Length: 109
Length: 113
Image (cartoon, each protein chain N blue to C red):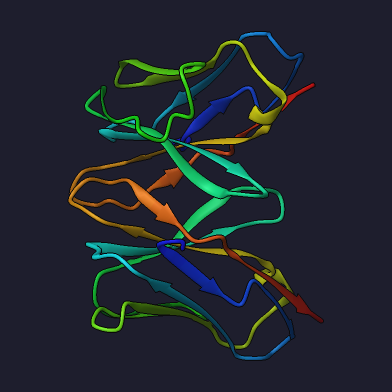
């Protein structure tokens, strides 16, 4: 079993919809990261969090340490949000990450 | 800063050839990571360095893979000899201790025929 599981694997939404991507992990972590991989392949870090909630523009990330679960929400989705969203966890004090398989999001106009 | 720089962006080579991938981290960052991404396995850590010293190379698939970081501004990932199953996108990332957000390079798409 993978240490980091994401759901759904694929998601298609209409422009303007509210989107939720889930991430569950089975190990103790020091932090959780959400990454975005554009269709061209580039990877950008969206959030790094160890508790609570963070917001950046239309993106919101939450984490529940007790339940070992995190969610990434996108409000008022737009076709430019189409990308693969990857959850990754950091187990120790060092920097190495363990990745989920990603959620491929497609937002239709 | 220009961000993390990787070269080449694309590499096509024949089985058995030596391949060298290069990475220049963001100036001042003291962690450097090499990742491999395939359709089947997603993103996987190969090796990472702290202050130019390899810390964890447990993700390096086999002895054909080696990585070096001779100074704070340069790292190489070498595959010798290359095999078709090494075909993947190889990413380099760097971060600054105490911050931990990782900055990824654009990746090198390797195709071994």
